[in-house]
Length: 91
Image (cartoon, rainbow, N blue to C red; front, side, top):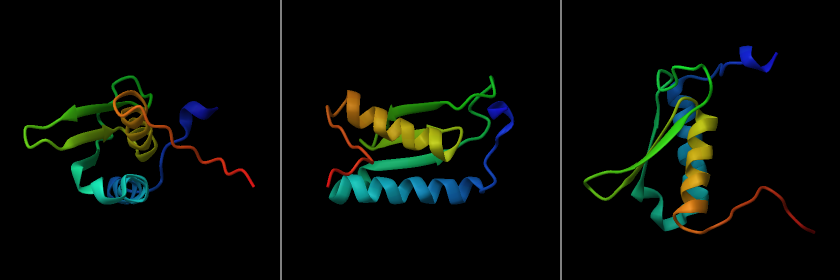
């Protein structure tokens, strides 16, 4: 079942992967984001994320996994920036 699937990558590897996504999507604004992976964020065993504006003005996105953090970044863009980014490519 899917409930037993867990990342095999380290928290650092997941963080770096999400930072690369942010760099590709946010372009010159990537330094405005801080990405953290905290596998203890979820007490339910499900992926979770939180988005917080820090006192230094940066947006901190913390996810229980890299996937959760990437989803949190997408959530921020969609609901706070009114922006949509998709993996789909139309030829």
